[in-house]
Length: 93
Length: 102
Image (cartoon, rainbow over all chains, first blue to last red; front, side):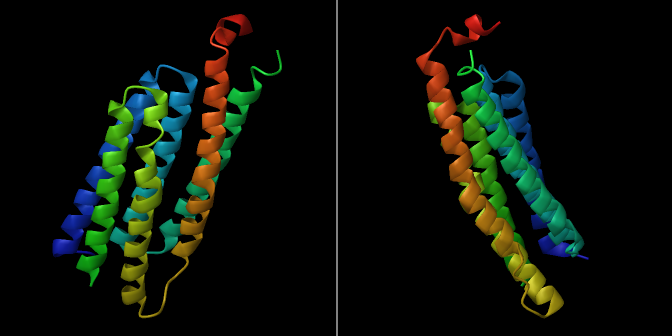
């Protein structure tokens, strides 16, 4: 659908978002402590959501919007749960 | 008009990339919290505005359901980061808690 200039710009945007996901993944694998990994996971979720939205614009279909919405909701829930675990796992002892 | 939408998406993607590079390069955790918020606030907003512009002109009717994601991200990012920072502060206050836990 999107041929020509706008398709090329969207492709560059997708490459940028993939690089951002790679940066977040590196921090996720290497982060010194648990809170670094949780933060990197949250960033990874947001970047993946933006990538899915960009896919939807490129394919000119609103089908990808629901997927992005679900990814956003799941990212919030998982990050909140992991943060609560980090906070409470040491309180219990 | 689709070129304008693509440029908006590119600006948002660039902000997300800069934020992730900042996440990679900062030294301590308390510095690392700051850069990803570029991608989660302004980056997400620009991508969503680009998506709204594109689908409004593609379908010849106002398409505004991207506002849902925008409201959701705006409300949730500060909540999760404040929870995470509270957890990090708590973990740093008791540095030997990790070794005692096992």
